[in-house]
Structure formats: structure tokens, C-alpha cells
Image 1 (cartoon, each protein chain N blue to C red):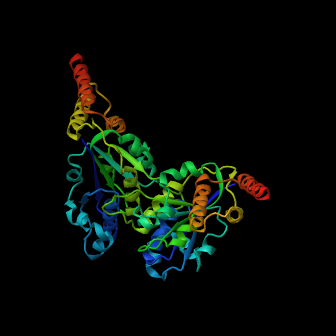
Image 2: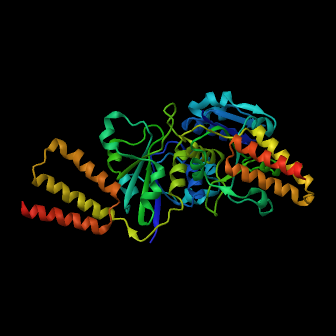
Image 3: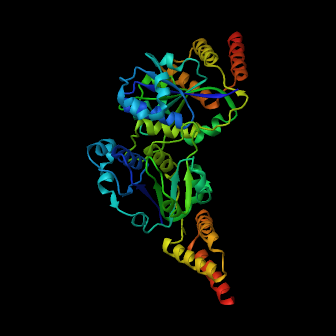
Length: 230
Length: 230
């Protein structure tokens, strides 16, 4: 049983940042890096990675977020603290890095942490792919952190968390639960214009709750029973 | 009453790092930077400081550590986790950044945090100037952090600590206490070869204890009474 942490950089723009990210990953004992459509990685990335060039060379390069998060038990998106108001309903609630230790101590599974583009962060669909949203509390005067600094602080908090034997539910099973709930929404004629927001609310609640496999099965049992009763 | 944090970089070698340090300082709401004999600060430092160029431009440049820590109530030295064994007696005990919040909540005064050279860290005299030693827990495989990453993690932990009305003792009064103790050591014929280590032990104990002014006065009163009795 172990708690595996994967870092995913979504379309990073500056190779120096990618190199710096690998260095701070290695400082905190992490090595699993996936890059979604990254910038070119050449001499500067190598220079900034310093003695973590192995992580840079072994980074998996993919073209979709879906590939990057494959096999995840939970997907955490890291955003700046100043989200546009329009996305408020899909960004909330925020977690701060300090809460990660308490959330994951004693668990096992694969935790994927997403970091967005240096300039634009995540788009809407990327935000929706996250089970939890994490934000680093920064000054209002200058909240925009360098990418590798943000990664450093999150990994600092994720490092030396004691894993345990409580398994996080499989991403695939969570997806089935999600689809099952969506079916139920249709069965009960849930208003179409509210459905997406409510489904996202469920995703976030389950993300916050760190469901274990048995809970997912029980929830699906309840939904099935409701459906049969209908 | 406030808790003021000053960052001191001792002989930083790379201007990009100095720029990155100013950025992460501003991210966490800090602005007081002192550089002891820094490298040249030119275009790259400005580029890496990004929107924190004001901090870079207002950084005080000095030529001695003594000037850099002037006015401090407490001096914290940040070191890598792999100190040479020979310095062990002057490096211990280590604090980790997570402990800072508990240590300084409710206090007021000026906390100076020292960061050493990228390659060599601190020399012996610089270590001795510190009241507390802080180390960031890192992987044994690659413990050497980038300077600005280390600053980022320490400031992340120092940010939004609620100051209070418990004043930290003045550095000057602590020095008088130290001198007074040293006098006492002479009065009691303390073995010369042990004196330095023992004096450093006292400094570290007082650093850990975050003395308030009244405690310093009372300690000096006790020492004075011992001396008169002798």
C-alpha cells in the first residue's frame, strides 16, 4: 500500500520552469511527471533541473489531459487564489496545501496534482476534471506565483505523509458512480439547466470525502434501489 | 505591535535566484530584503523578479552579516538538511518550517531569516550568529534545494501568522545577557575549552524559548545575584 503522487503540468510555456519543477520534485522525493503539450525542452530545462535530469528525461509527454490523469484515484487542480468570479461555482470550495496532510494520511492510491499554464491557468473543462481544487494563500498585491514555486509548496506539504491501508476508490469506479448518478438525474426529470452544476457539486463532494471503494459500491446500490423503486 | 520578517541572503551567487526570491517574497506579502555582498544584479535578476522589481530595487546591500541582522529580535538560519558532522554541535537542534507558526503566533518583533550561499551555505561564524536553525525536510537522494524554492517554503509558513502583543526581547538586551553569562563563566572558572560550546548552547536555548524582555531582565538579575554571592 502506498500513496503515489503524480505531478502533471498542463501546457507549460517556459522550459526553465519545467526544469525547476523536476528539481523541486526530486528534493521532496517525487519522480512521476507528466507534461501535457509542453514547450520545447532543451538546454535551459536541463540546466534548471540540475541533478534531477533523470526526472526530466523520464517525464511522460502526452497530448490530452485524459491521458495524463489515467489511473488516478483523485485529481487535484492547483489554481491561483484570484479565480474569475464567473467560474466561482466550479472552483469552490478551495483547499489550502496545509490541509493535504490531514486529508491523505493513512490512505493509499494515486494522487494526481495538476498545475496549469503560467499565463492562463486552467480552462473550464480542465477545472471540471478535478476532484479537489487547491489554492496557495498569497498576497492580494501579487498573487501570481512562479510555477515551480507553487509546485514546491504543494510537494512540501505532500512529502512524508504516512500512507496507510485505506484505499482511495478507483477513478474508474468513481466514473461509473458519476454516470449512474447522471442516469438517475434523467430518471427524476432533473431540470436540464441545473444538471451540470449539480453533477459537478457531486464530484466535488466525493472528491472532498476521499471515498473508499466500499462506499462507492454502497452509493451505487442506493441509486440502483431508487431507480428500481421509480 | 507587529511581527516583521526580514529576508537576508548571504553572498548569493546567481542573480536569477535573487530575482526569484523577490517574487516569492511579494507573493507572500513580505518586502524587507537585505543582501550581504551579492553577485551583480542586472537584467536577469529583474526578469526573474517579474512584478516584484520594487523589492529588488529597495533591497539593502551591506557588506557584513552584522549590518544585515541589526535590529533583529531573533535570527533564524536556514540550512540544508545534510550538515557536515563536524558542525553538529553548533547546528542542532533543527526546526522545521512547520513549527514556525506555533513559535511566533502572538508575538511581536523583527524576525530575520538568513539564507546562505547556493554552494557553501553558511560558514561557522554565520551559524553562530543564529538563534535558531531551520531546515527544510528533503529527500536524502537530492537534498539541495534551489535558493528561491527554500525561501518560498519558509515564507509560506511565515505568512499570515497572527502577531500579538507578546514582545520578543531586543537583540541588544539578549547580547547583554550573553555577555553577562560569559562573565559568570569566567567567575566560576569554567573550563576554557568548553566555554564556546556552552555559550552557544545558551544562545540556542534562549533562541528556542523566544524570551520576552522581562525574562531577560530576570535572568540577568539571577546572574548578578550569583556573582555578588561569589
